[in-house]
Each structure stands twice: as structure tokens, then as C-alpha cells.
Length: 176
Image (cartoon, rainbow, N blue to C red; front, side, top):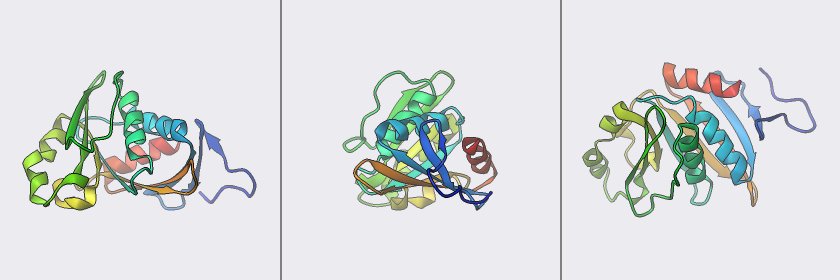
């Protein structure tokens, strides 16, 4: 699949993109505001099941927590999801399974991530982890990586990369 035709990029579910989807295990979406970022997260949340891990990286304020709010909504969680700046791990019960939201930016040492027992949470629900580069060894090898880039005051480019067969399946379904 080649890049979109010149002119206005395709719009899907209120999200521009995938603007870049040439690589089978990668895709790029552009969102124009928090609402679109949240909607893309909700679409992803509907595809997740226990054991799935989504690793989120990018600058502060790039939209990672907004995206996790969407994931939680897509999984059927009706409450509010807040930034984990002061809590390392939040738990949200959806309709069918749980979502665990981890913020590893606050870790002082990678060994602290092992104490969180991230792999046990992955078995019990989906995982959305911010700051995965702080402890990359604690995540399952098959995961979906999402990198956020601020491209304007309200626009964000989200680069998604599948790292295994299950995350590849999720990404393929998300592209549809």
C-alpha cells in the first residue's frame, strides 16, 4: 500500500491516516486534537485482550495519557483515566478485561519495574505503559509500540510498530 494521493490526507474515524503504512508492521496516524487522539485509542482498545501490551513513548504533553483514556474507553471503562505522574500503576476494569496503565518515567532504576511485576499484569489484562525505555526488559517481546510526536499546537503524529504476530494482527485490524 503506497502513500495517500496528493491533496487532503484520507480521514478515517476522525483521524487522518494512515499517512504512512508501507511497512507491513508499521503505520503512522496524524490526529488533529485530543478528541481524535482519544478516538484512535478507543479503536485500539476495542482490539485489545489480556496479554496485549502497548508501549507509549514521546515528549511530555504529546498525548500519551489522552490515548490511554481512549484505550480504556474502547475496553468499556466508563470512569476517568488520569496521568500517572504520581502513581506508577493504575487499574481500570473494562467490560471484558482490565487495563493497566503504567508510568515508568518516575522510576529511579530499571529494577523498580521488576517490583511492579508488569508481566503478571499483562497476563490479567491489557497494558498501556508510558516510558517503556526506562525498563524495556520487563515487557513481553510481542508488543505494539506507539511513538508520539508533536507536529503542531494540536496535531500529533503517532508512529505504530508491531513487534510480533499478535501485535501485527492488532495493527492490521487497526488500519482497516
